[in-house]
Amino acid sequence: MRRGPRLAALISVLSYMFIYMVAPAAVAQEATTLSLTTPYPGVAVEPGDDANFDLTVATATDGQVTLAVTDVPDGWTAVLRGGGFVVQAVTVTEGAAPSLRLEVEVPPEASEGTYRITVEARQGEAITVLPLSVEVSLEAVGGVTMTPEAQLLNGASDATFTFNLDIENDTPAEVTLELFAIGPEGWQVQAQPAGQRQASSVTVTAGGTSRITVTANSAVDTTAGDYELLVTASGGGHQLQVPLLVRITGTFDMTFITAEERLNAEVSAGNPSQLGLLVINTGTAPLRGVVLSATAPSGWEVAFTPVGIDAVEANATTEVVATITPAGNAIAGDYVISFRANVAEVQSSIEVRTTVNPSAVWGFVGIGAIAIALAALAWVFRRFGRR
Image 1: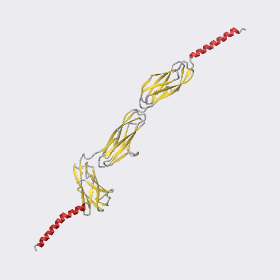
Image 2: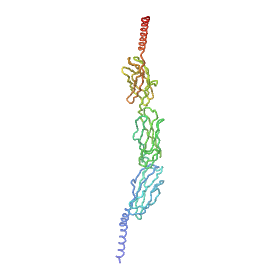
Image 3: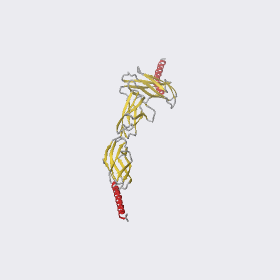
Image 4: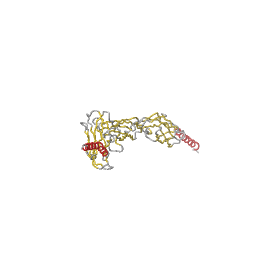
């Protein structure tokens, strides 16, 4: 009779041992078929910012998985979203894991420290828990920066200057920034997202980078020098400013004309005559070391006063005098003289038709010849006229 109670007690003990030792192993084995993961289970944010966690649910058994968020700190908001909705459950099929995001709003008054939030997933008897941590720190999050690929560009005043700048968003939230760009008076400056001609703002994803393009065209007749542009991107509590520099090397252009803008002159054989010439700088860069020269008929001489010009500033005019001395035996008629003014970067030339008038000496010679002829005729008449 005593063996009966002892046997019953032994069976009871063994039953409890089975429940506490074997059953948990079975539950654990079943639980391994359900998983809930995130690539970044611990993040750091500033007070007032959002902490977002991308979640992945996987299970070996197709079906519905219910979700719950627990241990949310007081004053905080934690919402599970999927497909644009607030969700409490998802349907999981083999090879298809729905996209989930836990959006946590940290209040501005949150104290610095590390806070725990738990996400629980349940499918039937299988349960898995994902612990998450949010560190609140005033220096936890990076900022938004704007960096130019090149900060200085050189070129002529009629060139288009193109700058590329990268905006990097090292924060956990997407930002949209309005773009502005200004330059000197009369300049045309635009800032736009790269590849977009009409947009005036750029959106940069959390942790992402976007490129903007700044184009600048100088005002008409901009002289050589350095000119500053200012690019601004503002929005979402961020104010970014980057100065850029355009160095105008100037354009080289020259006009060479006669002082009276006539392309003809009159000279006398053997006698010097003066012709006024103008060197006009029609470019935006100084003309330095202007060399003057002329090509004239053989035996002619052309001299310049001054012999050369040290510099002609932009939009300035310098007058020179060309002294033309035709050959003494030059026959009356029209001749062409080519005048040139040149610097290393540009040159200009004109052709002047020069008319040689008969020399006064030959006029006197002609008058003398006529007088001699008349005197000879008079002598002939006196000598032979009476016969």
